[in-house]
Length: 187
Image 1 (cartoon, one colour):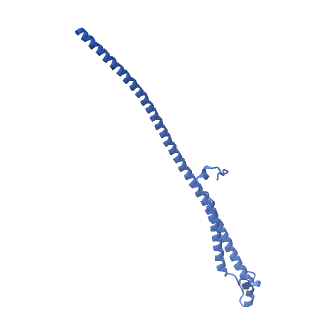
Image 2 (tube, helix red, strand yellow):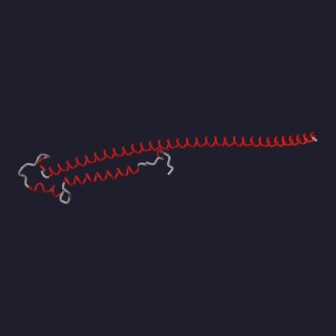
Image 3 (cartoon, one colour):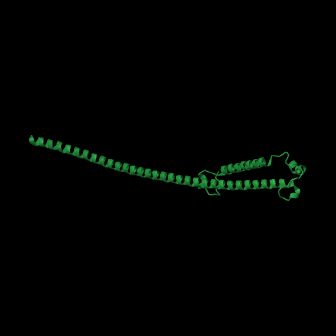
């Protein structure tokens, strides 16, 4: 009976051992499968991390390039506007100088026209008043000489201001004009 018991016990022990071995084998397979999945997740994580790093680096490079393009564009606009300012100031001074010289010449011509025999010298005392009336009659419906010069200067100022505003408005301050070549018309 003991032999029979041992045999049953041994049989049960062997059965339990086999069952435990099967469970252990199943768990080992499951662990191996989870290991493989974990390695796949780790690869995916590392790929995502690398893609994120690449995206961040690309965005930083694009931001740096945009800042450089903005700086180059701003410098280009400043240079263009400075050239317009200098050109306008030069033309203004030249036109004002010419207007003032013309006014001096006209004043001188008007003074000498009233005194035809004077030849450009100062008027002689004792000339009759009627001798100067022909030059004065020509200026009858006009502004007096000082006011005419002021009006001419203001007209020149307005004209130069209009030219300056139009020239400044033509300066393209968009960053795309830096990136495109001078012959490139994408608009």
